[in-house]
Amino acid sequence: MADSAYDCLVIGSGPGGYVAAIRAAQLGMKTAVVEKDQVGGRCLNYACIPAKAVLRVADVLAEIRDAGEFGIKVGEPEVDYGAVSDRRRKVVSTLTGGVSGLFKKNAIELIEGEAALAGEGKVSVAGQVIEATTILLATGSVKRPIPGTQFGGRVIGTEEAWALEELPRTMAVVGAGASGAEIASAYARLGVEVLLLEALDRVLPTEDADISKLAERGLKKQGMKIHTSTLVENVKSGDDSVGFSYGGESGQADWLVIAAGRGPDVEALGLEAAGVKLGEQGLIEVDGALRTGAAGIYAIGDLVPGPALAHKASDEGVIAVEDAAGLQTHPIEYIDIPRATFCTPNVASFGLTEAQAKEQGYDVAVGKLQYGAVGAGTVYGDRTGMIKIVGDKKYGELLGGHIVGSKATELIQELVNAKALEGGYPEVARTIHGHPTLSEGVMEAARAADGWLIHG
Ligand SMILES: Cc1cc2nc3c(=O)[nH]c(=O)nc-3n(C[C@H](O)[C@H](O)[C@H](O)COP(=O)(O)OP(=O)(O)OC[C@H]3O[C@@H](n4cnc5c(N)ncnc54)[C@H](O)[C@@H]3O)c2cc1C
Image (tube, rainbow, N blue to C red; front, side, top):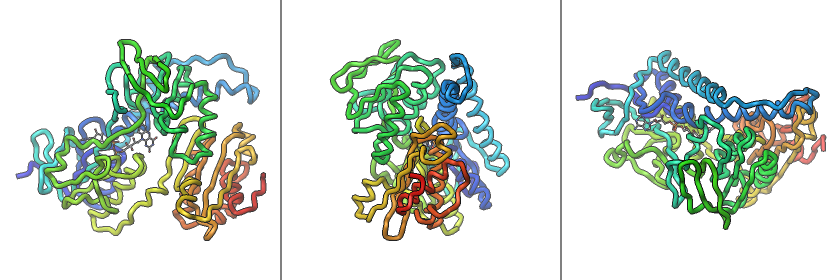
């Protein structure tokens, strides 16, 4: 006998789980969410949101330092890191409070505790058995160390890096992907001596090569040291610092942050007994509607393949519960999900890089535009950013968009939307844009791809 019963039971309240729960409730399902820690999941409490709150502080500080260029005289600004941490906590609590409010508004019950699958549509939480027609697994991911190291002492993960209560003097960051680049860029601008180490041959190694080059140049300007094609080994954590070796050199830092990989949080779930299969890299195997092989059980977000991003988790959550409700859904085009890195310079992309498009045999059109070519770049003080469009000459299809520079993470959406609405680069080239805006640069990059760049 179950202690309670729901149409939809969501395990995990991150951006995957909470959005899915709200959509399920909208569709008339009696819905509950089980959470073992804090409402809002890792994204709101420890990852995306605290990261962006601290990055924003670094941005404000950099703007104050650059004020002289705009004719404003200011003294040397002072960072009160205690107040920075207070603001970070406030941002988090405002947003997580918002999620709790949405649960109430949608009559979603929050069940506190760790959930495990108990077979045949049942889930156990702290000795209680809950029955549900649909069970949605949304338990996210946990940090993983690099080979030969373990977390503890002065060796921390990315979530801990954003939660430091004091600014350290030195920091080594292992991994120059999105998370590592964000941490390095924030702390370097806040005055920390940062060493950024990457095993592959460039920073942001999954981005288009042109973008990586400009991003690396921008990161170096913030005073950090960057070593690529470099493995970190012999990590030894002491009381106040950590020692390590990298590419034949030895290093020491107050903190070593490992930003080089995560794995799905599945240990407590009892997947095997419930018939849920794990595939590549230990991720849960699902079909285009996020169904696992086990009847009535769906999985989304960082638990399943695809980019580990909050908005991907949310979209999967919507698809999963809509499928459970009997609505028609469409599988996600994973390659076209926007990818955003909030370091300075800002980086964002979607779709194929130029190299990938060529490898796949497209007749590739490339349009590039430097921010300095449009009025807004000069007006707002970023002439070095770049927009790159990768297209297929055959039908003018947008294959990829790549932006490095101010507001890249906002600007990318125009290209994502154009593609979603079946527009190509010739259509973007002929869409009127407001003046003077950086988005005119997107239009000009599309014109460049179409062979009629005006400003350049
Ligand atoms: C430092 C950092 C910064 C990031 N920044 C961004 C960003 O800017 N933009 C972006 O799109 N993505 C970002 N990401 C990735 C993003 O955080 C994840 O993709 C996203 O959180 C995945 O959402 P989710 O709902 O799958 O899981 P999560 O957010 O991980 O939430 C899962 C929840 O499930 C709970 N849970 C786990 N097991 C159980 C159980 N057995 N019972 C009950 N509850 C359980 C956990 O406590 C957790 O609250 C970042 C990641 C990191 C680490």
